[in-house]
Length: 162
Ligand SMILES: [Ca+2]
Image (tube, rainbow, N blue to C red):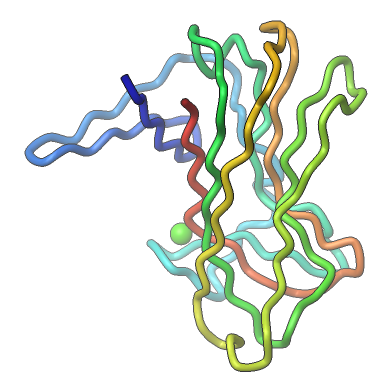
């Protein structure tokens, strides 16, 4: 059975046709880089995460496999929305798996914003296959990375594990 996790800050929110469920497992905060939150533009609510020359790492998720799911994770779908005032070429949404701060898998979603796609929210999505079993002590991280300091805003980051 496919299980969908919608992660927002510390909170797990699952919406179905007629109910809203809010869940918190009281594990340490798996979200990082809160200092990048800004109210300059937002697709939902009033906040998004701003990447620029001062903040090359954006708001992101960082958690041990053991805290994500009791079941083996075979796939992760990452989707999010991006707003940029100018075109971008070099920014990524990084997807990595690490053990004791060593990367064992490192991939990314290129966040390329064309001139005609500036000044509006653009959706990005990619599914990453996890072909082998990772021990519960391995970590999975997803975060924006703008190595050249390109300015853009990310909102509504969603991770679906199955
Ligand atoms: Ca928002």
